[in-house]
Length: 91
Image: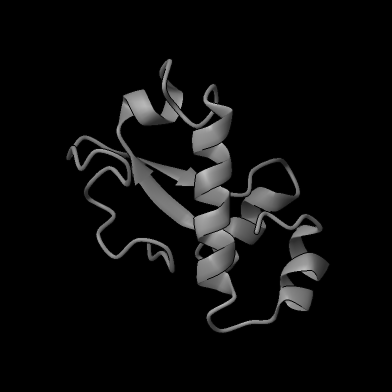
């Protein structure tokens, strides 16, 4: 599995721990396959994925990772392409 956001998917994107789970940055039934297709994935330790300080409970962390994903996507694509695919601007 590859990511355009993070080179090393063996370490948590937030804290660097090694015990990680892969997070689809733009989630939801329709968007999860799009996250996979466009390599919008990050590795997160269990705490930063599902814990009290994780992306599913910490709005600010979730939004920051989405901004990082959109920024990475727009290095090789346009904002219009992002909006056509994901329909929300995080930048």
